[in-house]
Amino acid sequence: MARTRVLIIGGGYVGLYAALTLQRKAKRLVDITVLDRRPYMTYQPFLPEAAAGSIEPRHAVVPLRKELKGVKILQARVASIDHAARAVHATTDFGDDLTVAYDEIVIALGSVSRTLPIPGLKDFAIGFKYVEEAINLRNKVLGCIARAATTDDPALRRRLLTFVFVGGGFAGVEAFAETEDMARAALRYYPEIDPDELHFVMVEAMGRILPELGPDMGAYATKQMRSRGMDVLLETRLESCEDGHIALSDGQRFEADTVVWTAGVKPAPILAQSDLPLGPKGHVIAQPTLQVATEDGTVVPGAWAAGDCAQVPDLTKEQPAYCAPSAQHAVRQARRLGKNLAMHLKGRAPREYKHRHLGLVASLGLNKGVADVLGIKLRGWPAWVMHRTYHLLQIPTFNRKARIALDWTAALFFRRDLVSMGRLHEPRRAFTEAASS
Image 1 (cartoon, helix red, strand yellow):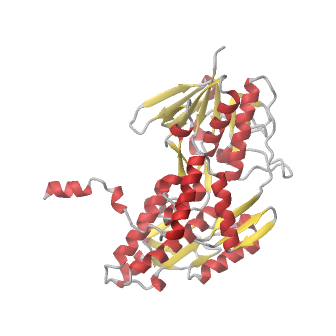
Image 2 (image 1 turned 180 degrees about the horizontal axis):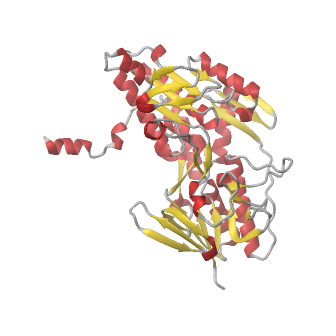
Image 3 (image 1 turned 90 degrees about the vertical axis):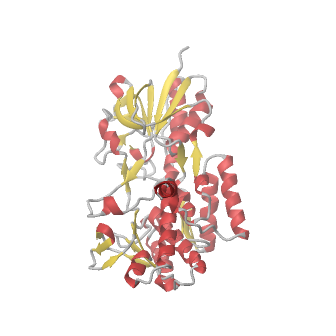
């Protein structure tokens, strides 16, 4: 009996968990291929801690080749999807073109940063979705502090010690709080800098931060960060950041050397280069069974979708309502998708995905957090412990759980590593300078 060729495009939460589940449920029936530009899955909730030096950045990613034994891994970027021909066209970072044929496809492309046409944003700001961005932010902040300690120019010093974060959702708040925590800890080694010189600014267009946690928890988080001297500007928009000249909608103008953009996500744009049915915001339309379908509900044979790139009905709410782009939904959808695809291949009817959120947790820096778990609201240290416990349980593989736990255990006895390695981005610089002398 010929095996079914299953192609999973995207190696994030959905790609990894769907492949693991499908292997377990239908290993003898399928040949699985995972196609992704990166050879690892990034566990995004740990990026703020990776940026802050609380954990080793490599421990926030899961290598696909190691965990998906027996699965073919193709490291390439999707160029187009021709589902009618059952083929995906892709390109590698080296310029090679690939065409991958399949029988069943799983769309797990996730999301990308949702940006706006703000002057200077594309050229000056950095994102915060991938581990390389977390490492870059860490090196950038520590590098700015080191440079500020060596300059006598007060204007340059203010610019170097001003850090702007745009977006008050979970990613933005956690990155903002953890990075400020790290920067303040680093100042113990820089007696030349007064802690009051640090200027951390959050810009949020809505009237509150962390809207998913409700107004009271958002207000608490705002109060806590403001008590640390951090500026949280609500109902304010970034209008320009050209060359570090920051212009805000409330009229403020100042200089900053670091701008971090965390203001939302959108489905992978490459979906527009496909013949699959898309919703009004560019998501692949999916049934509750996670099968791709047209607007009238007709199932598209051989296509499945889940995660941030999919428009999946949320059956716990009055329809029409769709699942929010969260790790909690993505992981559970992936497992359901893997089971459903295995059931489909065995001639059984797939089941609908239905999940009510267990709760939400957010870190506000070391020993500080907010949480709403099963209707119980926690603040401060208990919420921070809940945040760490939940994500330690959720990160895939025992290997990564153990490494994260060891990182945290070491932090109980030793201070966090606060060395900037910005030269990593210029590996040939020293050799080039030596060769030129």
